[in-house]
Length: 182
Image (cartoon, rainbow, N blue to C red; front, side, top):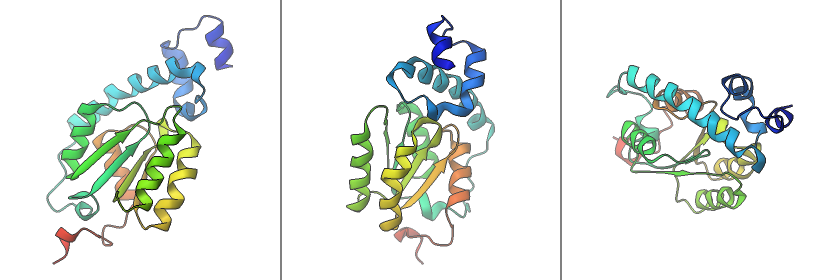
């Protein structure tokens, strides 16, 4: 139906189309939907920034610091945005946080999988709204096998959403961070 709407002249930025497509963004992996995916990302971005601006900074006694601080991470999915990557890196205290876009690039998923297996990553953050199901199929088995932390952010990529995913998926008491060992 979306394909027919676009072929019939509905613009990818039409608010009605975006509203209908937002919950199903993972279905639009084909190249023909590139403009629609971009519009969906741009539609989500202002809400992410607004949520982050309203949210207080992470408290010094946040139980999950050992899962993020001084660790090497990767964001998987979407269109990498440097300012947002830097904000996340600072907010969570990552030593390094890379953002890898995966649009039409299964090889990127395999590269991340190989980095997990080589012990070069401590945490993988999968941006569920911006990746296909193949991200889970390629990366998660390696993360589980190598005991590398992973979280799945259902929607968006702001600090608030990433924090909720970390708190949902990770056990704060199972910290592997050398700096938190007393």
